[in-house]
Amino acid sequence: FDLLLPGGEPVTVTPAGDPVLFWATAGGMGLTGLITRATVSLKRVESSLVAVDTVKTADIDETMAVLAARDKKYGYTVAWTDDLARGKSLGRSIITSGDFAPLAALSPRQREQPFAFDPRARVGAPNIFPPGLMNRYSIRLANEAWYRKAPRLREGQLQTISQFFHPLDGIRNWN
Image (tube, rainbow, N blue to C red; front, side, top):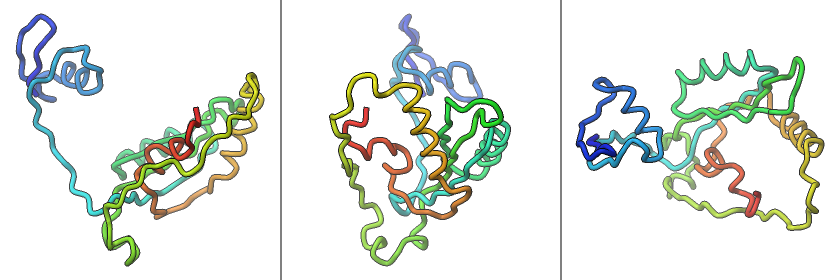
């Protein structure tokens, strides 16, 4: 990409030519300058559904090992980590990994509209919780329930883009 630095100097940046500036800009929020031209590589997908594999890990060591292995195998990986777990459970996580599903993985009905997308929230969070209800004790209970409900291993589940990348957004006003 071409970058206009804060001092007004134009530069062309590549991952090999200036990796520090490249990744600072690619991962930043416009603090390195203004991108004036960019070449991007797109990934061909056959559907808007994601074929997802889920694994539950017991501790930080297993979590890190699974994340490292899945980084090489999948295009997308995310971990929910119980940040209140302690002791031998420290770092326990639910890791979901996936890639966009090929047409062959879709049902005949899904193949009729393989790029169907409906990002609407399915349910709403009721506005009945008094201030102070969300605390370390109630969150610890919620984390425990979330961790226990997750399967130890599940493979090939089809999820929408929203379910995979933005699971909390399925609940209107969750925050």
